[in-house]
Amino acid sequence: MHPYSEAYYRRELQRMSAVRPMVLGSLVVSRESGPRPGDGYMYVETRRTMLRDVPVLRLDGEVWMSLTPMEVQSTFMAIQLAHGRVGTAGLGLGYFVQRALEKPEVESVIVYELNDDVLQLYRRTFGVHPKLELHHANARLLEGEQWDFFYADFYRHLLTPQAIDDMAALSSANLIGSYHWWSIEQTVLEALHAGLADRLPRWMLDAYLPFLRLFAQHARSRTVQLFGCGAALVEELERHGLGRRNSFVQT
Ligand SMILES: C[S@@+](CC[C@H](N)C(=O)[O-])C[C@H]1O[C@@H](n2cnc3c(N)ncnc32)[C@H](O)[C@@H]1O
Image (cartoon, rainbow, N blue to C red):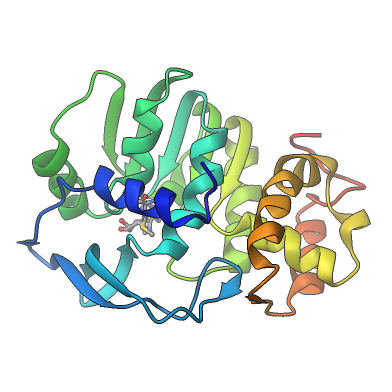
């Protein structure tokens, strides 16, 4: 199903129907309704329709995850790419984890989450699963681990250069088959827009151009949201030896 379709969004929302409003320490989960947010994933939303009953996770009063169309669209590739022994940080509402666990090609999902209340929320909502391990840990301190696929989503903001620093550090301290961070598709789009696609590593283009083609079908009638940070992101990749010329992972 197309990740930008309404039917896909409704199906994904339905899949998270187990999430109930809850307060646990500084964590608050609510289900909220309201006008569709103006930000889609890489496009500006102009539809004025309402969203209903959307799960929202706040930690210390700040929204860390909500199941808006943007979050669903930006998690699509992580779900698609997950296989084998999957590592992920952090847990949030458990949306990616629930979807990855469903996949037959995923053998196990190992979660690293900084906030113990978030782990508690997951256990109360979804219970245990034979393929799942939950760890209370700071993802940035992980070393000596091995995963076929790692999904880094411990960010509140898109396109943070910190995600590239984290990839460099985690890839050199652990053995990782393929690494995906939240908003990597937009990193590729920003680099393309800046005319710098030739400085991206081959694996990034191979993995994400198919998604950008799907996005292009959707974006035809909508405004594409670009931040103009392509050059800065490419330089950050190169600074860490992750650019096309000296990529040390996923070549
Ligand atoms: C955006 S949410 C993750 C959403 C999740 N992918 C989902 O599908 O619901 C980010 C999570 O990362 C956690 N986090 C933040 N910093 C972290 C760190 N250094 N190590 C591990 N988890 C972290 C937060 O507590 C939060 O639960």
